[in-house]
Length: 333
Image (cartoon, rainbow, N blue to C red; front, side, top):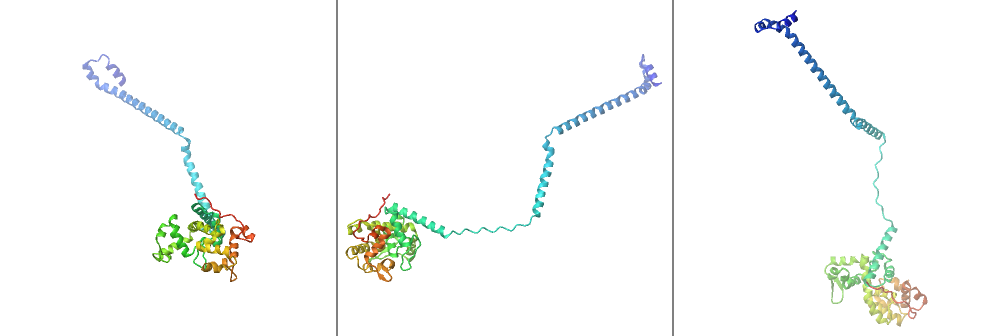
């Protein structure tokens, strides 16, 4: 009934009649407006659901396209954790190991020490040969006779010590005369010589320091070589011939003056007592000039010394007439 009233009132209605039908219009339009608003609400809800569905699909697509390692990473972490746990458990079940003993330091053998000494001595001999021109072979044989190639050898019967067995006075002499040429200028300057030719030092401490230098194989050999080199021209002049290795050894043993005296006796009185010829010089070396408490003849002493350097000379039985090679002198650098 209401719809029919609205349809009849609108066509051809005047302004006067419009006011008459206004209540009927309100009654007619309200259901229409309400229905339109409900339709709009339904349409908005449908659009929101569609947008939400599209957003969810996009999220699922993004998750599906992500790298597989991202999804597996927790699994790997769990596996690593499981492996570490297993290792800790297995370690906890092992019996405790005994602490390791500290490695004991290796003690060098006597053979190793001897080899090291020989190497040091050989280097010293070669250096002395280059510095002085005197053959290293001659110096080596003198060292073998004197100390058995031991740089720290000491003679219980005298003050001799070191590789070349220098006595106190002889060592001070060579340090004074040849030391400045081999880096010992400070020590040479500390020595003093009195009117009688006795050599000493300004104080006891300096003297002891100089005497300890005899234990240095390099200094011992090179200063011995310098002494022999200096004495060689005068020795050859007195003998009228070239110096042999045995002659140089006598210089080392008796000094230049003592060697000339011994060699003169060898030429003039070869059967004379060697102890009578060398005097006090025989005391530090009784094995050289004596045998079983008896003095050896000069000739016998020289033959034994020559055998060490020149075996052929000793086998000849005549040390004064048979020709022998002259002393081996290397060219100095």
